[in-house]
Image (cartoon, rainbow, N blue to C red; front, top):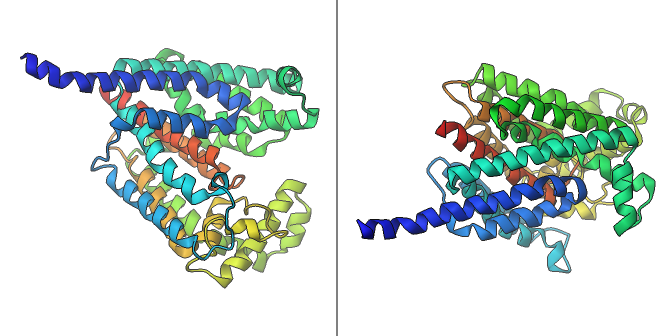
Length: 395
């Protein structure tokens, strides 16, 4: 009997350790989301590093893990023909991706391995923190960022227009997380937590001119309702749509440019959207020249002035840099992870996960696909999805 207790102790200690690490991370999600979104890469890496003993690849994880590993290998190979050559480790995307993949996987594994009581506590802390984040954003939207500007006046003065832009940028963090964050709270409080998060996201996004978070407030509930109403078929339909998005994006842009007056459409749009359409047009011209293998990882940085840094469109960037091989890999990954949400019966965890995943795809037209903080937020969504699924299964 004593021998069996001794053998079980390390497993119990690991579960407790993972739970406490998740609690620490949960405390920081809301402050990072508002004041330092770029810090999410460090936060998720630290969680993964601290929980490395919890790393597991189960049978259900193996397809996604194999696709990610294959994509990493292809990205590494593509650096041999990429015109972009990083001069220091901080600019070396393949080096960072090689560390991020195992560390983020470790963080997600910790959510599954954590002690259930501590995991529940971590989820509740995150839910309350994100609700408070929503209330802060509500105040910021109504006052044009008074609190954010006041904080910066103390530790680093910043122009009012930049402060408002940064404040608006944070709405994309809460706009992504709120479906899973609200579900993470106590059952009776979930509607009120969701209301606080959604109201803050919408108010600040409208005040500071960010359209995507406003769209996400409509997209997320629609997707969640579809997955709740048709738990078996809707995730598979979403998986197909995501795969088509990554495979067909260049052809869609080409069709708009070929059959419509592309420049007239650009002229009628706000400046940022017009610039983005310009990047897309240049991107498909470069894709046509090397459609199979692409131009290599981070090659987008070398195509200025037509493209500044990246095309601001995740599918187009993958096509441009990694070619059709990369696009097929991305389509396969999203197809696998979304189709895995299929259930025989309605599941709130599956519905919320699908909602945040689709918002992630929506926001992908604003960011570079390799940005560390954006990949870290994707890992955080996966962590919350695993944690909420585990909680739901335990009930």
